[in-house]
Length: 488
Image (cartoon, rainbow, N blue to C red; front, side, top):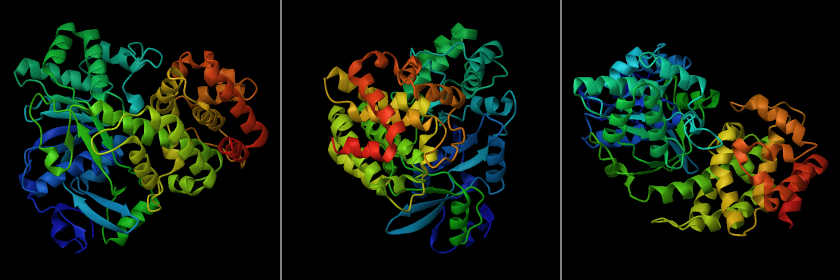
């Protein structure tokens, strides 16, 4: 059955459908970057509230700022912006149709339709999932990358911007002029202090063209920090076949694990849905939750994805089933990551590690090592390097983290151990493959990328084991190197 509003009452009996009147929903949120994660996470929480008869004026309007977003828009508009969510639990699969999204802004150069929609007084939150590397952060200083061509363009053409941030600023300018007031700017990306990062980008970009507007945004808008968590694989042929097994024709279904977490700082300048009634947590300790998740889960993903790719292990669950890769995961996490992570309400770091172990090993989740290894130039500095610095500062071991960095260097050579080619998998892939080739003979070349490692290449306690492991990987192979690490 084709997914549409008209067919909701005729869905197969085992598929949960919206019980609310979608025609009565009113928009309150524009979400930019409408990928799978958003639809399985933020949209799901809102859907749960709507199922309970609340939040009817907080419906989501989707948006994208890249040409390829037009393809997803066409798919979703053809099915009335509905999405089938399929939960992949080892005990069995289940499906529900989520209807919290009611429209998708046309994707146009200059983003006129998006700016107009965000300027609408009904919109009180603009949220984003644009990936960790999408916030124009200078890799070396962590400040605003004002010299990036996108930022230079948006500063020079504030009314016809290229980026989501430029479009938000243009909309806020209209709202200030009309008296509509500010909206909350809400990042849903895996960044430590994601609200603060979004504030830095938005205010800094606005200041390049309109300092007065920048001051107004800084004073009037809010930027709540948040921690988001749910494993959501990419959609491919298997997922499209799976949704058909449930009797639904959905061009953009989403699969996800049977776990979600959302911890949010309660800082919303124009109101918010009661997401806590759907299971989210409002807390003033978001930073601690973020640290635990980013270090143990996101860092753990990098620990296993790169050796998995080098050894041609296709999935995260497959990597966890591999005794050497799983051994690497447990040893590095237990000895070099967990000791530097503080507990949060409900979890010690050790208990959280056990939870992540179980989640990663879920055989129903076909999450690929390639997807997780994507954009290592953002993820290693964000998820791995902080643990290295903590270990060095405390005189604690960093041997395993040095090996993790060496596996990333080996992965970026672009050739797996079976001789197959790794297709480009990072915005800086060409640069990384060149440095990786040089590091094969001179390991210090890899750590010389100060934009990622800072001064770590000058710290012998890390640089020496890194060089040792990288040489061993090339001399003896990944498997023997992992054996050597695990056997001490």
